[in-house]
Length: 254
Image (cartoon, rainbow, N blue to C red; front, side, top):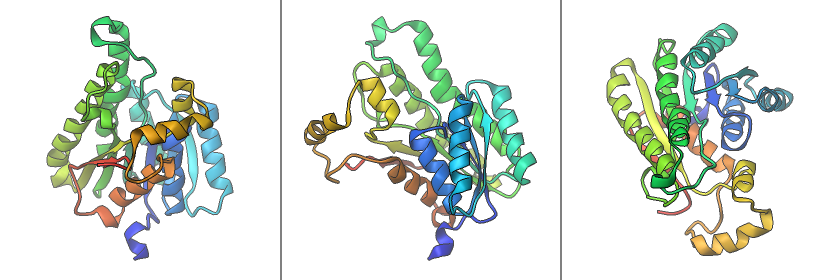
């Protein structure tokens, strides 16, 4: 059973690893034995993530690499850092993204449209291109999408469009990269009250009780970064060797 989730000897890159879901993914992959390159725009945040991993009992080691995922050259440098630091690249998690702006599409600032697609969709394009060059023995790519990529949320059309694009990129790449023995999947998280989400919605911990009642989730609770990370671990380990091209809803509901 253990070998299904053992990542000993594997090297992973996680974007958006400074906090929230990305931090949770980086931490769990290291616990499973992978060496991890933690990437984000905030040097302070990713250095803290790497320090916490290295100070823990995790089998894997971690380093930090400041990265702007919207820049091709940054993504190329990120992939190269993994190879230079750990000698190979096996796992790539395109997790960075998000949007803090809510507006009807007809009122949305065109600059915000461009920014949202750049950070959430084009970043996946750059990330995959950078990663595949170094996956000489196959590998696993997981893209963080969203329920918004399948379900419409008024006021978030720009974000939904970007994440819908991520879903189709994922399915297409699964076909194109299959001959290289590279699996490509996406996870679609539901509501996970990270600090970023709390700040964006101006909500406190005590506000989430009424929200949970409103959502009426069959699972009976809101999600955590570790819930999402556990699904990523399944997809990138031996446990997910026969899974590719899937967009997996991880949301405590149907």
